[in-house]
Image 1 (cartoon, rainbow, N blue to C red):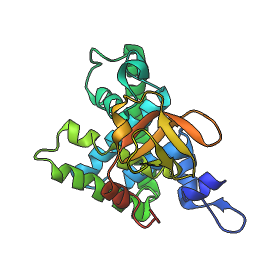
Image 2 (spheres, helix red, strand yellow):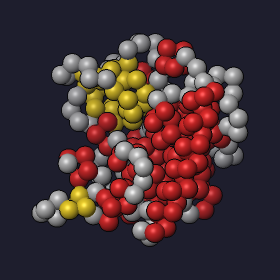
Image 3 (cartoon, rainbow, N blue to C red):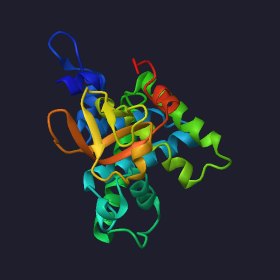
Length: 238
């Protein structure tokens, strides 16, 4: 219930579904991921918004598939961006796990289509101000680069996912490598200290193991800047 309330899916004294919650229930995905898709659908005005839904759908499909790269985290680290970039290609590349890639590709296309339909039905995807903030974060990153390449699109994936994982946003502790504080109060770190993301200032953590009571292990994450985080979570306390 805490998660659903944080996603804006519940409201009122009886914790009834909000219109956004009803829209989330229409998508065949975990509420976190459905929220990500509908926020991207809400941002889907103009080229940047359309790309946002494409990238968000690829990211959700990767999370649901667990991995699309052969060898998984041991071979490729914990960065979600490399998986999304792989899935956005027209055909599986040499690093792809072909079977998983094809399943995830079909899923991404289906999710994008369904999120677009639901978003139109509810009048903008149910993302409200967060959808506008998401579009701003996406467009700002694309504008910062000389051309809106595939790489530029993939770099936004942390901002795209932040609303669905508001309780799994991690900030690196000052002066420490691979030591993070999650927005839910727990600590977190990567199993491998050599993980490139260990030096990121902010992360959205998509896959965490239980760890101990005070600290979790990060298995899949995406970096984002403070400005991207503030824009993507427009109106929040972060």
